[in-house]
Length: 121
Image (cartoon, rainbow, N blue to C red):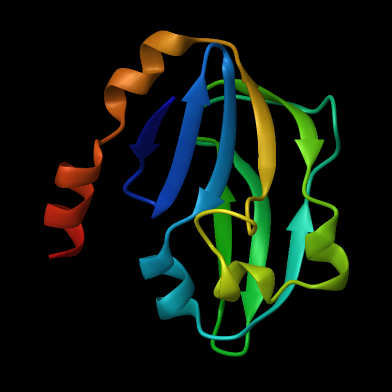
């Protein structure tokens, strides 16, 4: 497994052609208390950069973007009844989607952990 990070403060844990997508602890902290997560449907296809959901918090609403071309193969249904999981455990139990990656070469456009830590400084 390899974890990649986007400039949109998302993480993507990749094994083979499957990625688990969530927001970083930094993003969760910046958002504040999450009150709602709008998720797309299983089998929906997206291109890199497409909006694939929205996170609403007491402070703001923030879009979730597809880090690579992908298809949603599973959503974290726990977030519907407990959106606060994104605050409690953003980089594990608070995952948002499982994605089938269509173009693995796009992973090269994402950051490793060291580069992400430098970004958020």
